[in-house]
Length: 412
Image (tube, rainbow, N blue to C red; front, top):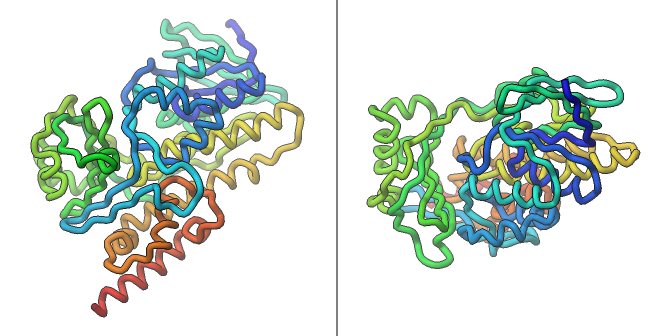
């Protein structure tokens, strides 16, 4: 069997894989990226966060995205009946980008991968990893080509950026069940979206459905809009019929979504993902690290997936650069602990969304502007800003704030 030598094998050419490759290539390392699919390909996770812009800029990939004329996203709007909470990234607590983009992921991911390939990084599409082995001096992986032929890759290190494919967690038995309840997502792309005007056009809408579900509405610059609903499996059983009919009935059952999407037309069949939340036993091991959604995936409600992918790829590439140069590194402290801080901050917000604390805060009549700027920074993805108490003490701070606002509301 043929053997290929490289410094780093990167599994997956999505946002995590491309950004890690960009950073490592700049440091002069030999890389090989293997990607199971062909780009462009459809995937959800279409609403970015401003924190990702800084990381794209650092990797030298921001220009490739800015040239694509994606829809500019200036914030997020949460709606519940006739109540509205409008976050604008211009009013956040943390210094950083005040905008980002809404992106059809097929186009977005391909733009990143093409930019990396243009720098000389080899990307093998339609190639999958079928086995791995770790030795004291190297790691090896068996790669299967589209024609079924296999070859070996011998690398100093493997970064698993395979996203939902979760290659190393499956091969190394690292998967754990999520501590979140099982939820499903039903989604499609539509035309005919009656969008708000000007600065408000690109903001993501999150609509709280009257029957314990939530809806996303993400506008694209190509005239299409991503729409989807997230709920428990029991919720979906209330709506009979095929997925298209289910999704249409759910969207029309929410007053805000129904008004905006009254003239929508589906441009592809509705698709369903169930039980998407996942976790792992460890984020790294001898000569490998998990990056992006290959680590943990929480929930789509705050669009954290791509943001965490870029952040973990950035940190992994920096730690690995030092290791490959012969420096002593501590993957637990320098990588795993850092990544988990961001994940756990988002975890507190996801939990707060579903247990009612965040809706209590968002729709309160007497919101504190300074506190809302701190919350806005978290929603912008700045979950490593330790000067923000709604980062460092997220669970406690949200619980206390919800209790105060709830108490004040009961006295009115």
